[in-house]
Image 1: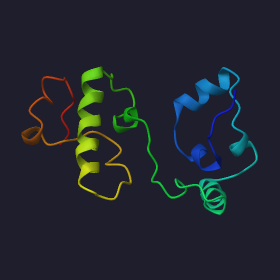
Image 2: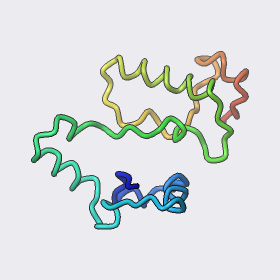
Image 3: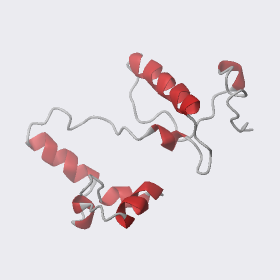
Image 4: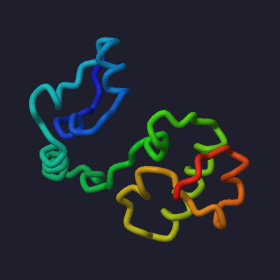
Length: 117
């Protein structure tokens, strides 16, 4: 089995990549030293319509490491990202961690999220 991880993905802490490697999943782009810019350039040259789409990391990446994830928490983030995406805002990820102000997210406390200063 192979995945689409590339050279640039190794710069981030990604426990899922370690788990995939332990299961024998290969990352041919990363193994060949090919980065995200090269992948996008090849896609552009091939005329692929998605060559310049912004990254779309998984919803779990919006939470601090070690934060217990629940379906309810992931749903809140998915709805927020869907709302922001519907506003034609440029998508570069809407932050790396969930830290909505309590006044704007009445379910925050009920979901058990840690409060940030």
